[in-house]
Length: 298
Ligand SMILES: NC(=O)C1=CN([C@@H]2O[C@H](COP(=O)(O)OP(=O)(O)OC[C@H]3O[C@@H](n4cnc5c(N)ncnc54)[C@H](O)[C@@H]3O)[C@@H](O)[C@H]2O)C=CC1
Ligand SMILES: O=CCc1c[nH]c2ccccc12
Image 1: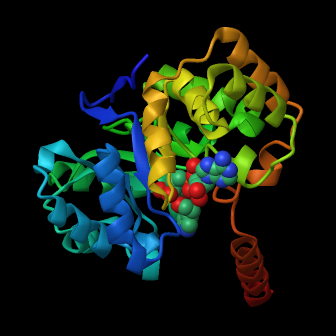
Image 2 (image 1 turned 180 degrees about the horizontal axis):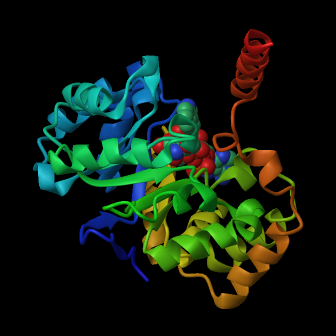
């Protein structure tokens, strides 16, 4: 099955595979984005904190693509204490755009404990037309529940998704499906990049051999089977071509089940999740404020 047209809850259609720009140095970003577009990507994912929006913008300008032919996502990451209203204007200026397709709160840490208040700032950005769609990233079910009374339901939750975290993430996936919040899967290749030799390798390599494809394509095809948007990256053109070719790779139900059974034997979320839990420093700071407050009262 080719990549699906994924329809968001606001009616807009997002391309199912996107080129991610995290950790790409500024001096390489323009070239890498141009290569990605050259091989067929029409969706670029960046963030305020990646520090390369200017170079993404330069690449977009160089392609001469019509604005409606490319999907651009960026994220409010709270850099230098900015709030969304200020951050989106800075991002648009750097990207050389009048709007982004999707604007995300990069982490729930940025808005806890007043999640709804933070989300209302995103709704204002949507109202002004600076972001056509708005969503969140790294949100847990408990974070999303805080938004159930919001005027706009997030269109997207961009999360860590690969076979080693699938089982524990399933309740979040089910909650999002029920609320029509679509999923973008980041770091889908972790079984190859960070945990090679783990239990998922066996089915992934066996399926890859049977289908005559590369193991990374099997992992991306597994994400595709979940109906999620795939976010991946590479500086190598041949790898990017393989990612795009996942459009033509379909796993059987048995393949999908074998990957998930192996994934459940792996290390799980505690090993891989980074951007969700409160910061240790944040908690320490909160404790210090509490102690100081009690001392003042004493
Ligand atoms: N919202 C968030 O908090 C986060 C968002 N992201 C977004 O998702 C994008 C993709 O995330 P990544 O972790 O970079 O994705 P990923 O898990 O797809 O890893 C990409 C890396 O895998 C390498 N690779 C490909 N095939 C391989 C193979 N056979 N063996 C070994 N290595 C192989 C590539 O060269 C590249 O360096 C990011 O660029 C960013 O845009 C990523 C992390 C967090
Ligand atoms: O998006 C990739 C990971 C990342 C890097 N810096 C931050 C800040 C807040 C959330 C996620 C991330």
